[in-house]
Image (cartoon, rainbow, N blue to C red; front, top):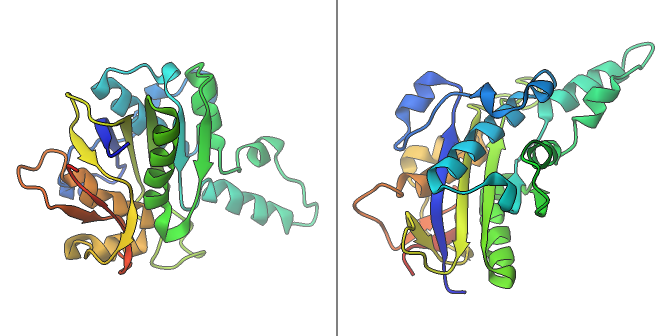
Length: 247
């Protein structure tokens, strides 16, 4: 395989001011993407992930039940985990079984599979500042060995401020559907992620340093752009991960 084809994407941003500043279409959380029985236990992270994933599938005209998936998040269910830790230090130390169940890294991936009745493989990963890049690398590895198409969802909810002052905001989620090799209806074609020294766009550096999942913004901004560079950085760290376009 010499390239991946991007067939559809979606982006979910709860903050209206930040949403308006993005160079591509984005929308608020759509709670209708989550079945009613799951909504009451869903976190902001899960709501954003479902919203973005549903939009990507709709744009690409693909059934969610037919796609393997990769869910990537720097902090995962950080608010639920923080709640559990707060409960543990209390005198009785009693925690909610439901909260414990929903605190794991693959919460969104698991519920997505259940909600969509999808029996395809689902992966969940976290890689700190390289989370978005590693999601694309994992997608490359899966498609190069198995072919077909898959869904990649990258998301992070707002982090509790006292855990990481000046970090972990704004909340953001994006989803893309990739196909192995070239596709006639692709919105963008990218090569295998690799390590290099391409500069990350300065306009987004400060935000991506504060909320690492925003490293996806430069690549997504090129989907509808008339002018595309040969290479785009996947991380504000330099040297860092990058991909070639239109290879």
